Image (cartoon, rainbow, N blue to C red; front, side, top):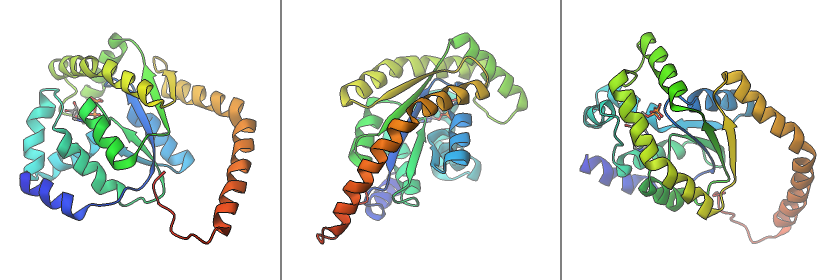
Length: 231
Ligand code: ADP
């Protein structure tokens, strides 16, 4: 693992993208919402959980190490998850990236700032734990995820609550805009909440985009050259 982290640090450099965070408890629908945004709004979706599950599935040394931690519903080390995320982000320079499940701890959050700067937005999915629990157990019956069982789900919820408050505080301190979405209904319902905000904001967004265009045209005229890819 140490070797993996060291090599990765040497190989990975630079930072790619504009970041939108998708925050919410286990079973809140972060993945579903992110996938739909990816399909309909051509953003890139990176899920820290999926990246870890990929490693587990492939049976890499890293995967073997994190499988037990995930089964206990605990957080894997920030260094590992950050490395996996950076590795993927490098493939999408200049794209808007949705981060699902990251940051999850203050350490994650500091690492994120270091790699990508301040996120432009956070989508916060919230509802009661009982609903989350029901969903996880229903998904567990489909048998796709080893951590969708009662014991692990309870531990995941506990871990989530342990870090969630700090995470939201951090977003507030950083001045990251947070959009709260009620995820107790269907995925379709969550989607419509976002669409409603989009409809309301369209004229304002268009107005500010045309101002941005003017600004970037002026920048293009400027012969100063290299513009950073970040944000
Ligand atoms: P969920 O949010 O439904 O619990 P995820 O797929 O996001 O599911 O995460 C599954 C597991 O992967 C977590 O319980 C945790 O062990 C690990 N994990 C995911 N993201 C992180 C992260 N940012 N930092 C540390 N561990 C993580």
